[in-house]
Image (cartoon, rainbow, N blue to C red; front, side, top):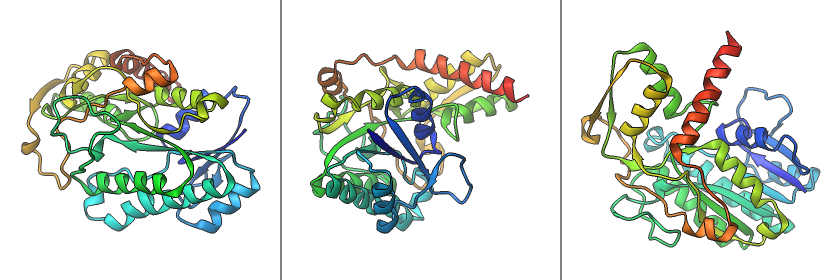
Length: 298
């Protein structure tokens, strides 16, 4: 099969490229930035003509949409940009998939929920996003469902990897430079290693799995706060930095975040018969990757 991976230069796109290295499928990775990426195709997914050309040129069977506007804070002042990338462009991809009988695998987020629940959110829980980012991602989900295309919407949370910018790498860097860090302890969710999500996405490409369309939650196992995650990063790295818990209100932010955004994964585990790694085990693996990458660059 021919697989189009949008956002190929991002965290998840690069993780898919790593795990798909020996795959029997043909992967076409795209990027949108002005910076050239060797081996990738430039594609503005908000342009219908560009999308249709790439789909036809490469005879695409499956789209994995990893692209999107992910800056939660900046989205509050760039609503048009957030909705263009997270909703309008998604509608274009879904339309292109529908026209060709392709499957669209679209990545969504826990931020479509308001965090008022005390139990992990199931796929059919009512969405009520608190931020522009969350509303734009929900709009993308709705566009996919309305398109008539065959689709899988995969909701995930707190994504990190050795690539790009993410919370884990930020804490690692700051804990090397500062003796004390204050980290929010009243926002609870689940960190997800991009490599784990990428491995799961590859399992979806099996013919029998592509027929199991619908919406699924996928994160690593377990629950923690941002404070807990920061403590683990410091412990695993050996950085002697004191991590102090604080409340969300102590930080002046534009975008409201859900205080509780744990996702229920019963459906995905039952449907696909998979086991999901525990977040601390995956964090330890990623920290080892980061350390190896740093050593090789020195």
